[in-house]
Length: 273
Image (cartoon, rainbow, N blue to C red; front, side, top):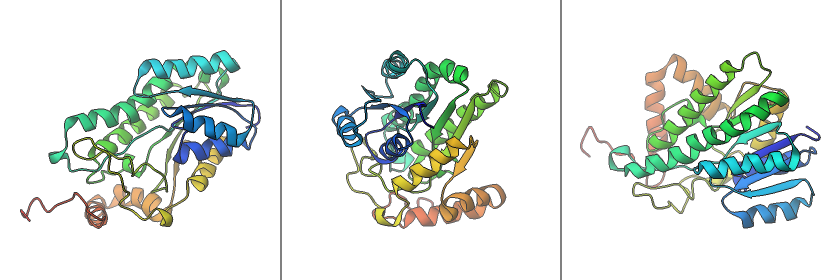
């Protein structure tokens, strides 16, 4: 990893921030993008390194993504790794949700990945580098109460799988990383049915995998040029396994699991209760 040029979107908090710290410890040159420049500046101060480029980036804005990539190329002359990490979540039944919420989630999660990939891809192909997408177990199974989120993560997986196949003989490495539930701020800023922020997490964050452990495993998967990474056994690998071989059972287990969340939006619609 030493000397590699790495772009991370959504680097101001959570997994993105942990990725920046893990990669910096390995001697990379960082290009960090996020909407909150003050958070990026605080991270740069904490790391204390010279090779850290900061760019205010709203990934739902194509021009912001283009600027992030061009600024990186201007500063370093190449891109070795692009980690599409920026994302938002939501929590509401689709039948009750404003469609604007779905548009917002797709704009950030899916189109943010598309825009950054589009402008970074020529350099990544030239360097035989790594294109990384951070999805979720929600990119393998439909999570009730997370319709827009699951849709965006499925879309990212299909998009990046296609890019991998298109560049099968070019030397480009494509990794799709699917963490299980990971401690971060993503649930606190999740969108509700009307687009307002949820505010409080419905889950016990302390019982989840830490962002630091998650980041370490993702970086190791990049180093080993793996094509996929599914984290945690029960909520990750076993869930994907059930989805392939016992999908009806997984539907019931997923419903019951998500219904146990405090103030869960899931209701017994069929029974009218």
